Image (cartoon, rainbow, N blue to C red; front, side, top):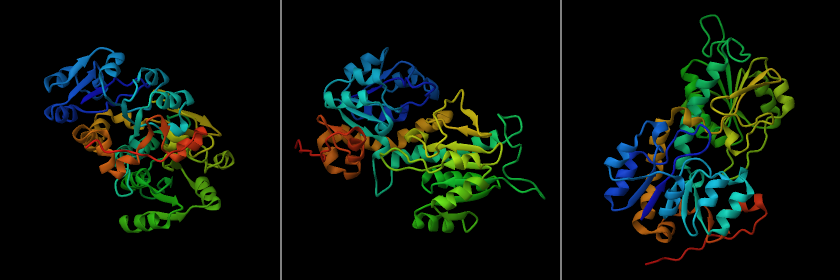
Length: 373
């Protein structure tokens, strides 16, 4: 098969879809991999590294798309990239179609693209590819919050996350007990902060109680407890995920107005719309803004801050699915892996993800695949 890895065009996106190790595995199996020149630069992978293991370096995204059967990306498609897709190609990427542009969805359907969202692939009710990025985002959320609590940041409270003897630590309130929330809790606890996790899933809260040996306070989520937690927080981490759907605003603007002056919000859910009403997308070079005297950090591609680690993590978690298709063909791979099927958003000209179909008011059809054996 012919695989294409374009250079990411999203502003300040430095990750690459496959590290040299992943490309090497595909080339050794007899496949052709086209890598756009410079695709790995942001993660410190040179063209020469890819060339040495047998990748073919090409010099435009148009050529990558024109020569490949399967496109492997990191960031959601831009409109320009969706125009470059060829009929019946397969696309692997974080798609986030629920908050995407309608034109991109139209192009996926018109060109009969098999679009597989990394964020939707399942494995025993886990989201293995997304989780690799969520682990990073959870840790980074605390690293970022710690920085903006400083006195010389944009209006920070001037407090130390872990406090000192005789001075209380910062209160870190985490909304959501998934992978991001757990990673953030572990990082905050390790720095000595007071940590509170709010979630509506009692089973997840019990797991946190067990895993952290009662060192993290767990709270059942409802409007009352969320409002109290937000008001108490020095740091608020938005870590809510509803698979394939736009994230609801669980924290209202009125709640934000009640927060401490100089408190920090890190809305990790922003790539799915954000779970805080006052959030809007920011960038890695201009990551924060002050609203109601509260610092907001709302960068959708936080793992790009540590692009090399993130690229290795993405490579390690996604390669098995890419190899399944390479070895068995698209239809047989999908038939043999129900979790991979869960990642398919569009197939043969129709939308096969019900949540996304509802978002765009499209007809939803269940995925129907026929073996090529």
